Amino acid sequence: PIAPKSGCTLVEEAYNCYPKTITIITLPLFAKFKITVTTVHANDDGSTDNIHGLDAATLKKRKVQYLDIAAPEQGKKMFDKGGNDDPRTFTSQLTGRGPLLPGWQKKVKPIMCAYKLVKSDFEYWPLGGKIEEFMENYEKGLFINGNRQMFCWMDNWYGLTLSDIRIYENEVAERTNAITAIKEGRKAGSIKDIPEVYPRRAADLAGPTAPA
Image (cartoon, rainbow, N blue to C red):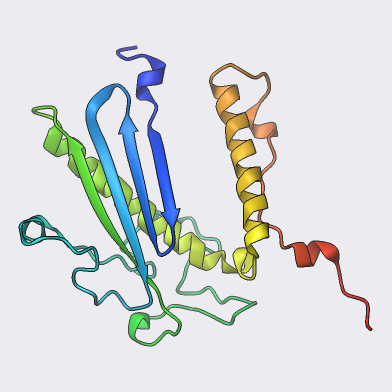
């Protein structure tokens, strides 16, 4: 190996305070590697020009990309998989939302846009530009596929209480830690034997309420 295993591990820090979130990704092996993703969620169709409040110099360098979770040319691999992860055909059984047809941004209510400001730094000549371009494309794929799944999996999370979400977060953290421990050799076992975890509504687990 050309680098220690620990040096090839990405470190992600996330600070969430809706409607704003900040994610910072670093790579311990490269001190000058850093990706910062600042997200602002707004109840609009993506028409706010400078929601991050950038100064004039930064605006000149900014490249704007519009990501449409229902556009097949964006994140095409997910459409190729088939299944029920296609916003163009999905309809929520709980909310009636969907499918997202051409021009949905001007027709659908309610609507939300996630404005993501991505800053990438890899100050290692001559690879800097190429690595930054690769990471930007990688992040774009994450944004498209993650939000596409969030929409198409709506019936799994719609109606969850904050308590339900905290329980789910803890279960995900425990599962992630168990997988990491197996990968690093700190725990015996097979990753495939670790069951998936899913969000659960306390109201559903309690069963039907008896009539008064």
